[in-house]
Length: 344
Image (tube, rainbow, N blue to C red; front, top):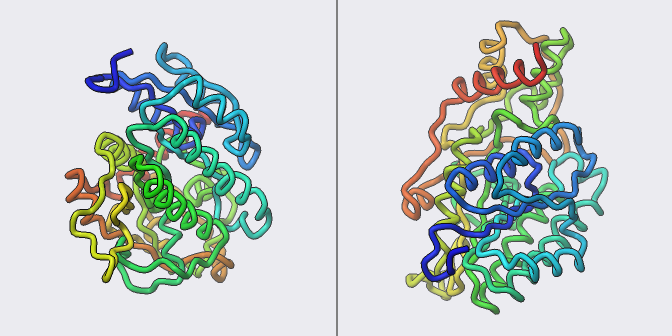
Protein backbone atom coordinates (compact mmCIF):
# COMPACT_ATOMS: atom_id res chain seq x y z
CA UNK A 1 0.00 0.00 0.00
CA UNK A 2 1.35 3.37 -0.97
CA UNK A 3 1.79 6.03 1.67
CA UNK A 4 -0.78 8.71 2.33
CA UNK A 5 1.72 11.34 1.21
CA UNK A 6 2.13 10.11 -2.37
CA UNK A 7 -0.41 7.39 -2.92
CA UNK A 8 -1.58 6.70 -6.46
CA UNK A 9 -3.86 4.11 -4.85
CA UNK A 10 -6.09 4.46 -1.79
CA UNK A 11 -7.81 2.13 0.63
CA UNK A 12 -11.39 3.35 0.39
CA UNK A 13 -14.26 2.33 2.64
CA UNK A 14 -17.63 2.29 0.88
CA UNK A 15 -20.74 1.85 2.99
CA UNK A 16 -23.86 0.60 1.27
CA UNK A 17 -21.68 -1.27 -1.22
CA UNK A 18 -24.53 -3.61 -2.23
CA UNK A 19 -26.76 -0.66 -3.05
CA UNK A 20 -27.55 0.83 -6.43
CA UNK A 21 -25.11 3.75 -6.29
CA UNK A 22 -22.75 1.79 -4.04
CA UNK A 23 -22.14 -1.02 -6.54
CA UNK A 24 -21.51 1.38 -9.41
CA UNK A 25 -19.18 3.52 -7.28
CA UNK A 26 -17.21 0.45 -6.15
CA UNK A 27 -16.80 -0.72 -9.75
CA UNK A 28 -15.47 2.67 -10.78
CA UNK A 29 -13.07 2.88 -7.82
CA UNK A 30 -11.73 -0.58 -8.58
CA UNK A 31 -11.31 0.29 -12.25
CA UNK A 32 -9.24 3.29 -11.15
CA UNK A 33 -6.93 0.96 -9.23
CA UNK A 34 -8.08 1.59 -5.68
CA UNK A 35 -8.61 -1.04 -3.01
CA UNK A 36 -12.16 -1.05 -1.71
CA UNK A 37 -13.60 -2.36 1.51
CA UNK A 38 -17.36 -2.54 1.15
CA UNK A 39 -19.93 -2.99 3.88
CA UNK A 40 -23.70 -3.43 3.75
CA UNK A 41 -26.31 -4.93 6.05
CA UNK A 42 -28.27 -6.44 3.12
CA UNK A 43 -31.58 -5.54 4.74
CA UNK A 44 -34.88 -6.65 3.26
CA UNK A 45 -36.25 -3.20 2.37
CA UNK A 46 -36.14 -4.49 -1.20
CA UNK A 47 -35.07 -7.70 -2.95
CA UNK A 48 -31.96 -9.04 -1.24
CA UNK A 49 -31.30 -11.19 -4.31
CA UNK A 50 -30.64 -8.05 -6.34
CA UNK A 51 -28.18 -6.82 -3.72
CA UNK A 52 -26.42 -10.17 -3.76
CA UNK A 53 -26.23 -10.06 -7.56
CA UNK A 54 -24.57 -6.65 -7.36
CA UNK A 55 -22.06 -7.97 -4.83
CA UNK A 56 -21.34 -10.96 -7.09
CA UNK A 57 -20.15 -8.50 -9.77
CA UNK A 58 -17.76 -6.89 -7.30
CA UNK A 59 -16.50 -10.16 -5.81
CA UNK A 60 -14.51 -10.91 -8.96
CA UNK A 61 -12.17 -7.99 -8.25
CA UNK A 62 -9.10 -9.01 -6.21
CA UNK A 63 -8.91 -5.58 -4.58
CA UNK A 64 -12.49 -5.73 -3.28
CA UNK A 65 -13.41 -7.15 0.11
CA UNK A 66 -16.85 -7.23 1.67
CA UNK A 67 -18.19 -7.49 5.17
CA UNK A 68 -21.84 -7.78 6.09
CA UNK A 69 -22.24 -5.06 8.68
CA UNK A 70 -24.79 -2.51 9.84
CA UNK A 71 -23.58 1.07 10.21
CA UNK A 72 -25.81 1.29 13.29
CA UNK A 73 -23.60 -1.32 15.02
CA UNK A 74 -21.32 1.01 16.98
CA UNK A 75 -18.76 -1.58 18.09
CA UNK A 76 -18.50 -3.23 14.69
CA UNK A 77 -17.91 0.10 12.91
CA UNK A 78 -15.32 1.19 15.47
CA UNK A 79 -13.47 -2.11 15.07
CA UNK A 80 -13.65 -1.83 11.27
CA UNK A 81 -12.05 1.63 11.25
CA UNK A 82 -9.32 0.51 13.62
CA UNK A 83 -8.49 -2.46 11.40
CA UNK A 84 -8.87 -0.90 7.93
CA UNK A 85 -7.85 2.72 8.65
CA UNK A 86 -9.20 3.88 5.29
CA UNK A 87 -7.66 6.81 3.47
CA UNK A 88 -11.07 7.96 2.31
CA UNK A 89 -14.68 7.08 3.10
CA UNK A 90 -17.65 7.08 0.73
CA UNK A 91 -20.74 6.82 2.92
CA UNK A 92 -23.77 5.71 0.93
CA UNK A 93 -25.48 3.42 3.44
CA UNK A 94 -28.88 4.67 4.57
CA UNK A 95 -32.46 3.64 4.97
CA UNK A 96 -33.82 4.89 1.67
CA UNK A 97 -37.31 5.87 0.56
CA UNK A 98 -39.49 8.86 1.33
CA UNK A 99 -42.85 7.09 1.69
CA UNK A 100 -41.47 4.24 3.81
CA UNK A 101 -40.28 6.78 6.38
CA UNK A 102 -43.95 7.35 7.26
CA UNK A 103 -44.30 3.66 8.11
CA UNK A 104 -40.99 2.79 9.77
CA UNK A 105 -39.46 5.95 11.28
CA UNK A 106 -37.15 4.11 13.66
CA UNK A 107 -35.35 2.46 10.75
CA UNK A 108 -34.34 5.94 9.58
CA UNK A 109 -33.21 7.03 13.03
CA UNK A 110 -31.09 3.87 13.46
CA UNK A 111 -29.41 3.91 10.06
CA UNK A 112 -29.37 7.54 8.96
CA UNK A 113 -28.70 9.20 12.30
CA UNK A 114 -27.09 6.72 14.70
CA UNK A 115 -25.29 5.02 11.81
CA UNK A 116 -23.87 8.29 10.52
CA UNK A 117 -22.58 9.23 13.98
CA UNK A 118 -20.70 5.93 14.02
CA UNK A 119 -19.09 6.76 10.66
CA UNK A 120 -18.19 10.26 11.84
CA UNK A 121 -16.66 8.84 15.01
CA UNK A 122 -14.57 6.45 12.91
CA UNK A 123 -13.32 9.35 10.78
CA UNK A 124 -12.51 11.25 13.97
CA UNK A 125 -10.65 8.41 15.66
CA UNK A 126 -8.65 7.50 12.55
CA UNK A 127 -8.47 10.76 10.55
CA UNK A 128 -9.36 10.35 6.89
CA UNK A 129 -8.29 12.41 3.90
CA UNK A 130 -11.91 12.94 2.89
CA UNK A 131 -15.39 11.80 3.88
CA UNK A 132 -17.95 12.01 1.08
CA UNK A 133 -21.51 11.20 2.10
CA UNK A 134 -24.89 10.94 0.41
CA UNK A 135 -27.42 13.64 1.04
CA UNK A 136 -30.56 14.15 -1.05
CA UNK A 137 -32.56 16.65 -3.07
CA UNK A 138 -35.35 15.92 -0.58
CA UNK A 139 -33.71 18.35 1.88
CA UNK A 140 -35.22 21.20 -0.16
CA UNK A 141 -38.63 20.07 1.07
CA UNK A 142 -41.22 22.82 0.83
CA UNK A 143 -39.01 25.12 -1.26
CA UNK A 144 -40.78 26.40 -4.35
CA UNK A 145 -38.02 28.42 -6.02
CA UNK A 146 -36.50 26.42 -8.88
CA UNK A 147 -33.83 25.39 -9.59
CA UNK A 148 -32.70 24.46 -6.09
CA UNK A 149 -29.39 26.04 -5.09
CA UNK A 150 -27.07 25.04 -2.26
CA UNK A 151 -27.33 28.66 -1.14
CA UNK A 152 -31.05 28.19 -0.43
CA UNK A 153 -32.30 27.63 3.11
CA UNK A 154 -33.38 24.03 3.73
CA UNK A 155 -35.39 24.38 6.91
CA UNK A 156 -38.72 22.90 5.84
CA UNK A 157 -38.39 19.15 5.19
CA UNK A 158 -41.65 17.36 4.40
CA UNK A 159 -40.59 13.79 5.26
CA UNK A 160 -38.58 12.17 8.02
CA UNK A 161 -36.20 10.84 5.38
CA UNK A 162 -35.48 14.41 4.27
CA UNK A 163 -35.02 15.51 7.87
CA UNK A 164 -32.43 12.80 8.49
CA UNK A 165 -30.50 13.80 5.37
CA UNK A 166 -30.44 17.44 6.43
CA UNK A 167 -29.37 16.32 9.90
CA UNK A 168 -26.47 14.44 8.26
CA UNK A 169 -25.25 17.67 6.68
CA UNK A 170 -25.34 19.47 10.01
CA UNK A 171 -23.63 16.60 11.79
CA UNK A 172 -20.85 16.41 9.20
CA UNK A 173 -20.30 20.16 9.37
CA UNK A 174 -20.02 19.96 13.15
CA UNK A 175 -17.42 17.18 13.04
CA UNK A 176 -15.44 19.00 10.34
CA UNK A 177 -15.49 22.14 12.47
CA UNK A 178 -14.49 20.39 15.69
CA UNK A 179 -12.02 17.81 14.41
CA UNK A 180 -10.76 19.25 11.13
CA UNK A 181 -11.30 16.38 8.69
CA UNK A 182 -12.73 17.32 5.25
CA UNK A 183 -16.29 16.23 4.53
CA UNK A 184 -18.51 16.76 1.49
CA UNK A 185 -22.24 16.11 1.22
CA UNK A 186 -23.77 15.32 -2.18
CA UNK A 187 -27.43 16.05 -2.76
CA UNK A 188 -28.46 13.39 -5.27
CA UNK A 189 -31.41 14.13 -7.54
CA UNK A 190 -33.60 11.08 -8.43
CA UNK A 191 -30.94 8.63 -9.57
CA UNK A 192 -31.93 5.97 -12.13
CA UNK A 193 -30.27 3.47 -14.45
CA UNK A 194 -29.11 -0.17 -14.71
CA UNK A 195 -29.11 -2.11 -11.42
CA UNK A 196 -31.53 0.46 -9.98
CA UNK A 197 -33.77 0.09 -6.95
CA UNK A 198 -37.05 -1.88 -7.31
CA UNK A 199 -38.88 0.64 -5.10
CA UNK A 200 -38.20 3.47 -7.58
CA UNK A 201 -40.74 4.48 -10.23
CA UNK A 202 -38.79 3.35 -13.29
CA UNK A 203 -38.31 -0.19 -11.98
CA UNK A 204 -41.91 -0.50 -10.78
CA UNK A 205 -43.35 0.94 -13.98
CA UNK A 206 -41.26 -1.38 -16.16
CA UNK A 207 -42.27 -4.47 -14.22
CA UNK A 208 -45.98 -3.57 -14.35
CA UNK A 209 -46.03 -2.57 -18.03
CA UNK A 210 -44.33 -5.80 -19.10
CA UNK A 211 -46.86 -7.73 -17.00
CA UNK A 212 -49.75 -5.94 -18.69
CA UNK A 213 -50.74 -4.25 -15.43
CA UNK A 214 -51.65 -0.62 -14.80
CA UNK A 215 -49.16 1.77 -13.21
CA UNK A 216 -49.92 4.14 -10.35
CA UNK A 217 -49.09 7.67 -11.48
CA UNK A 218 -49.04 10.03 -8.52
CA UNK A 219 -49.69 13.75 -8.73
CA UNK A 220 -51.83 12.97 -11.79
CA UNK A 221 -48.61 12.74 -13.79
CA UNK A 222 -47.71 16.38 -13.22
CA UNK A 223 -44.88 15.82 -10.74
CA UNK A 224 -41.51 16.97 -12.04
CA UNK A 225 -38.15 15.41 -11.20
CA UNK A 226 -34.55 16.07 -12.13
CA UNK A 227 -33.86 12.46 -13.17
CA UNK A 228 -30.10 11.85 -13.08
CA UNK A 229 -28.42 8.91 -14.79
CA UNK A 230 -26.23 6.69 -12.64
CA UNK A 231 -23.04 7.14 -14.70
CA UNK A 232 -23.29 10.90 -14.23
CA UNK A 233 -23.75 10.46 -10.49
CA UNK A 234 -20.70 8.23 -10.23
CA UNK A 235 -18.55 10.59 -12.29
CA UNK A 236 -19.48 13.42 -9.96
CA UNK A 237 -18.79 11.30 -6.89
CA UNK A 238 -15.34 10.29 -8.16
CA UNK A 239 -14.34 13.87 -8.90
CA UNK A 240 -15.54 15.13 -5.54
CA UNK A 241 -13.88 12.26 -3.68
CA UNK A 242 -10.57 13.29 -5.26
CA UNK A 243 -10.94 16.91 -4.14
CA UNK A 244 -11.26 17.18 -0.35
CA UNK A 245 -13.46 19.93 1.00
CA UNK A 246 -11.79 23.10 2.22
CA UNK A 247 -12.89 26.05 4.28
CA UNK A 248 -14.37 28.84 2.19
CA UNK A 249 -11.99 31.83 2.29
CA UNK A 250 -14.92 34.07 1.27
CA UNK A 251 -17.19 32.84 4.05
CA UNK A 252 -18.89 35.72 5.86
CA UNK A 253 -20.39 34.88 9.25
CA UNK A 254 -22.50 38.02 9.00
CA UNK A 255 -24.12 36.72 5.79
CA UNK A 256 -23.52 32.95 5.86
CA UNK A 257 -23.66 30.74 2.77
CA UNK A 258 -25.43 27.49 3.81
CA UNK A 259 -23.27 25.35 1.50
CA UNK A 260 -19.82 26.41 2.78
CA UNK A 261 -18.26 27.80 5.92
CA UNK A 262 -15.16 28.24 8.02
CA UNK A 263 -14.91 24.46 8.42
CA UNK A 264 -13.61 22.11 5.68
CA UNK A 265 -17.14 21.06 4.76
CA UNK A 266 -19.03 21.54 1.49
CA UNK A 267 -22.39 20.57 0.05
CA UNK A 268 -23.12 20.12 -3.67
CA UNK A 269 -26.12 19.27 -5.83
CA UNK A 270 -25.68 16.46 -8.34
CA UNK A 271 -28.59 16.61 -10.77
CA UNK A 272 -29.22 16.62 -14.49
CA UNK A 273 -30.44 20.25 -14.48
CA UNK A 274 -33.15 19.24 -16.96
CA UNK A 275 -36.27 18.46 -14.94
CA UNK A 276 -38.78 16.15 -16.60
CA UNK A 277 -42.52 15.93 -16.04
CA UNK A 278 -43.57 12.44 -14.90
CA UNK A 279 -45.76 11.86 -17.96
CA UNK A 280 -42.77 12.58 -20.22
CA UNK A 281 -40.64 10.18 -18.19
CA UNK A 282 -43.29 7.53 -18.72
CA UNK A 283 -43.29 8.43 -22.42
CA UNK A 284 -39.55 7.71 -22.60
CA UNK A 285 -40.20 4.36 -20.93
CA UNK A 286 -43.03 3.51 -23.34
CA UNK A 287 -40.76 4.35 -26.26
CA UNK A 288 -37.95 2.14 -24.95
CA UNK A 289 -40.31 -0.76 -24.29
CA UNK A 290 -42.46 -0.32 -27.37
CA UNK A 291 -45.54 -0.73 -25.14
CA UNK A 292 -48.17 1.79 -24.09
CA UNK A 293 -48.68 2.08 -20.33
CA UNK A 294 -52.08 1.75 -18.68
CA UNK A 295 -52.01 4.72 -16.33
CA UNK A 296 -53.93 5.02 -13.08
CA UNK A 297 -53.81 8.70 -12.15
CA UNK A 298 -53.66 9.34 -8.40
CA UNK A 299 -53.13 12.38 -6.12
CA UNK A 300 -49.77 13.24 -4.58
CA UNK A 301 -48.66 11.08 -1.67
CA UNK A 302 -47.73 12.45 1.78
CA UNK A 303 -44.06 13.42 1.85
CA UNK A 304 -43.77 13.78 -1.92
CA UNK A 305 -42.23 16.94 -3.36
CA UNK A 306 -44.05 18.35 -6.39
CA UNK A 307 -40.94 19.38 -8.33
CA UNK A 308 -37.16 19.15 -8.12
CA UNK A 309 -34.53 20.83 -10.26
CA UNK A 310 -30.82 21.14 -9.56
CA UNK A 311 -28.60 24.16 -9.92
CA UNK A 312 -25.20 22.49 -10.45
CA UNK A 313 -23.16 25.66 -10.91
CA UNK A 314 -21.22 25.05 -7.69
CA UNK A 315 -20.35 21.47 -8.65
CA UNK A 316 -19.14 22.59 -12.08
CA UNK A 317 -16.96 25.28 -10.53
CA UNK A 318 -15.53 22.86 -7.96
CA UNK A 319 -14.74 19.80 -10.11
CA UNK A 320 -15.48 20.85 -13.70
CA UNK A 321 -18.39 18.45 -14.23
CA UNK A 322 -22.15 18.63 -14.74
CA UNK A 323 -24.45 15.65 -15.44
CA UNK A 324 -25.92 15.73 -18.94
CA UNK A 325 -27.27 12.29 -19.99
CA UNK A 326 -30.72 12.79 -21.63
CA UNK A 327 -33.59 10.93 -20.01
CA UNK A 328 -34.45 9.05 -23.22
CA UNK A 329 -30.90 7.72 -23.43
CA UNK A 330 -30.72 6.74 -19.77
CA UNK A 331 -34.10 5.05 -19.75
CA UNK A 332 -33.17 3.03 -22.85
CA UNK A 333 -29.99 1.84 -21.10
CA UNK A 334 -32.07 0.78 -18.10
CA UNK A 335 -34.49 -1.20 -20.26
CA UNK A 336 -31.63 -2.99 -22.01
CA UNK A 337 -30.25 -3.98 -18.61
CA UNK A 338 -33.67 -4.98 -17.25
CA UNK A 339 -34.42 -7.27 -20.18
CA UNK A 340 -30.99 -8.87 -19.93
CA UNK A 341 -31.09 -9.30 -16.15
CA UNK A 342 -34.59 -10.81 -16.17
CA UNK A 343 -34.05 -12.73 -19.44
CA UNK A 344 -37.03 -11.06 -21.12
